Length: 249
Image 1 (cartoon, rainbow, N blue to C red):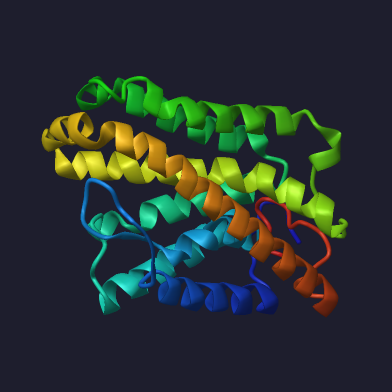
Image 2: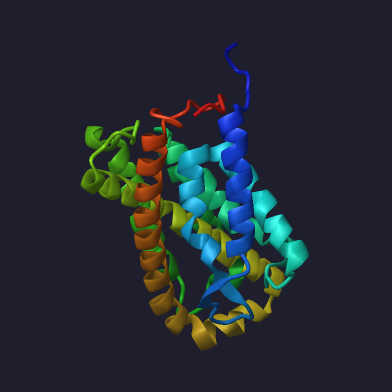
């Protein structure tokens, strides 16, 4: 392959289509009620970081976009409207980058989202400011520490199951936090000035609930992801992490 080219193998296309279809179905199945707004966090949140690891940051993000778009056409129920793919895309992109050794890209993404949140004037109100982003800062710290740990560097495949679960958690937790914060920001921009009153009313409750949601999502994603990776290894579909810029498994 010529350096800088981007090609899709038959396996990649097949997996991308499969994930897009699965994502579309799970995008209409509720998992958690959204506090402070209408709608639900859907079951698709459990596979967003997995898609990034399996397909890579670019193809994985595209697969999420296609799946969410299909879901919006069939069941247009997301409170984020046409922007509903954003959290899933950023989650898949973050996990895809981190799983390929580009920890700094995932870190920069999360720190950028944190900066936007803190700088948005309507967020600078009690009880959420600046405490809302404490767990996101912890997630950024996880990425930074992981980048320095030789034991969790890619490739992540051909690992024993226990170690694989640990490694996936280090990738999935920050990725789901990036998706959560991006979804919060989109929700705020759509809600406008009304977000200030919402924070004053439900801010404390939201700050207590969303860490639990993200913990559950991370745990379920790790279990599903480890099982899928082992299954794909057993089928011989891939054994190494594809390089950035080459869509090969």
